[in-house]
Length: 64
Image 1: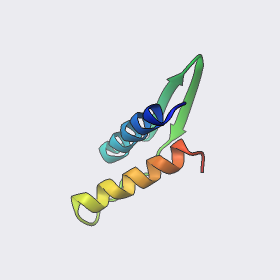
Image 2: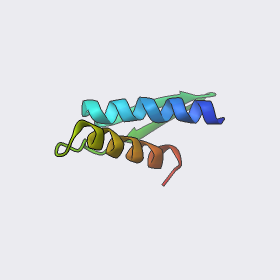
Image 3: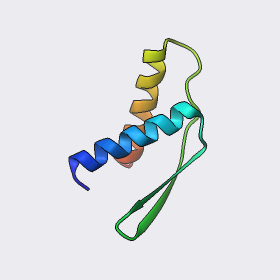
Image 4: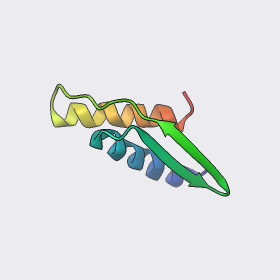
């Protein structure tokens, strides 16, 4: 997966976290991956909530 694909996946997972989804399923070249998503941050500003979701999504994409 190249950088652009990772960045798009990270953005899609970020949006799913912000929507409060529990599971995110991703298909990549004959491989289906399902991720358990953390609950969104409810306190703080919108920017803080989005940053939290982006950091969590980055951890998921990088396999941490």
